[in-house]
Image (cartoon, rainbow, N blue to C red; front, top):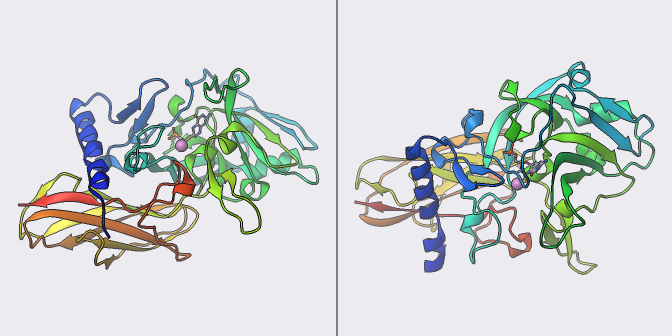
Length: 372
Ligand SMILES: Nc1nc2c(c(=O)[nH]1)N[C@H]1C(S)=C(S)[C@@H](COP(=O)(O)O)O[C@H]1N2
Ligand SMILES: [Mo]
């Protein structure tokens, strides 16, 4: 694998430095990617920890003020029974807890060349948590869908005006989920994260958690569900969070971003590190593959020329930690790379697919270190 100088310059060092500063400052356990609304990234060293205060935050608008006591979730549209559910109503239903990875569709955007618009996430807009709530499907059953139900639109209580393209006043954050995905076991309405009530920044009192899909589908501050008899064509799945598809029999079209793509990330050593010559060294990181399990992780210590297998497997929706020992036998710069293959046989591509616009970023990102 060959990387241009530009790509090398653009790769991990900037992120590593930002992470280091945030960690040393001590006050904010996360890297601030935007002040208002507050958008926070998990430092590499804390990736996939189980602490909620280290879990990344991605919000498009200010956190809405919602009171758990007066809270109501309405379920309306193409249903026989319109519902108004309090949190207590939901908690009376059969609860489930699941550990599920959530990754922002823009995670890794800082590695795009040329630089793309949007928040410049390093690798840290991803995390795994234990989520507790009820399956969305169980709530839809209570609402009794009419025949011909289509997308289930999850609507957040947060709102704002988008400047470009100018929106018709303030619009809410929302997302339509096809009925088939809405009914899957991994699609939940949750009130607990890591055994504690959701915090305001993660969507209290209730959020959706659409397991295996990028984070934009997991609508926070969920107060309204509208069942349509067709696909939803809202801003957040047409203009934003969409990618190009090239059908054989039709012109290229934009389709909503959905499933998380397989990815392996090296967390140690970090880019820019100096590692000792001829001493055994540990290369470690995490891998995940969304709706699919991780079947294989491979690492390369020569920039992608040769690869070796690392033991790592996990079930769908989860992430797995992996590690490999290696001996840096040559002094000088070294390019470390990791790649993941899911249990459907899909391996991370070496090069960026530009049809994905600025989302679904899982091309290989080498980590450059120096052996001394
Ligand atoms: N209501 C609402 N829900 C939202 C968002 C938002 O801005 N508003 N951001 C989405 C995006 S893009 C992501 S990646 C996840 C992030 O969830 P977190 O902040 O709990 O990590 O929430 C999603 N749900
Ligand atoms: Mo996101």
